[in-house]
Length: 218
Image (cartoon, rainbow, N blue to C red):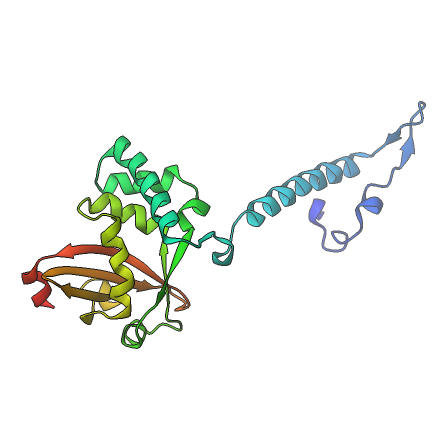
């Protein structure tokens, strides 16, 4: 016997599958045992399909994530979230993990379009675009990890991508990332850039100050 998943009847419309075979004395439809099982199966299948549709429809594609139009608003939001985490967990790797559990995906994946990367950086990344994004996720992670940076430091990123003092492949992550450096008035910065696996998006991975000695090592 084939049971409920018979290959010759699974395509039959439900109204035929559930056709009544008899009516009781009160005129209500009565189903035989096989149709009762089929009805239970179809009801469970409907519940699963509805749940599945809701789950997948709520997953946003990168195109649907919020894009901040003003850098100040973007920074303030990232800093606000970072301070919540710092107050709860301090400044450490556990704090970043906690943030990614506490805040939802749409909040963390929101981003600001910083500008365009120089051609050399795009080529080193082997990326298909020169557009550079900064996500809330990476901003709050950076604020947690680098307390010596303030808003004025982050505004320097615009100048760094426009005219870096030098551009190098990162010595970490199998040389996949690219670092843009800044050296102005004996102030040194490094901006690490990553590209996605499909090479269609570039993101700031980290940003920090560095010493002159460290700067000269690259």
